Image 1 (cartoon, helix red, strand yellow):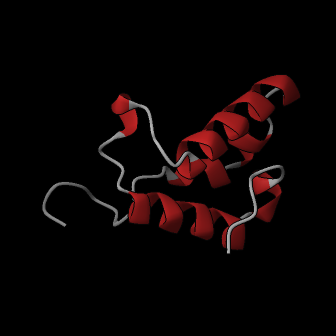
Image 2 (cartoon, one colour):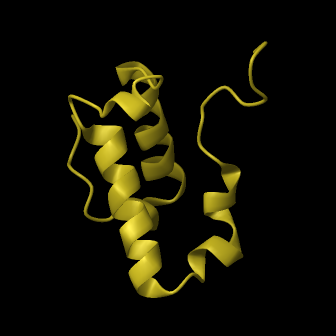
Amino acid sequence: MKTRIAKYRCSHLIYSDQFKQLPKPLLTRILDRLGHVLHDPKPEPRYAYLGGEERKAIASIIRETAPELAVGWPKVD
């Protein structure tokens, strides 16, 4: 952990009440985009720094700790 504070690159702010109280259309758009970034088998170049294993780990953590945020995300085995 020499280059960042947390092991995985996903802000803890997604658990905040302020995040969850965003206007529904904005919150839905953010979560849809996050789900796309975390599950896309061929990520866009701007997200290439997130390796496949890290994206899987982040998605798994969110599913386990805040399943309401992952509604609509693809099922993962």
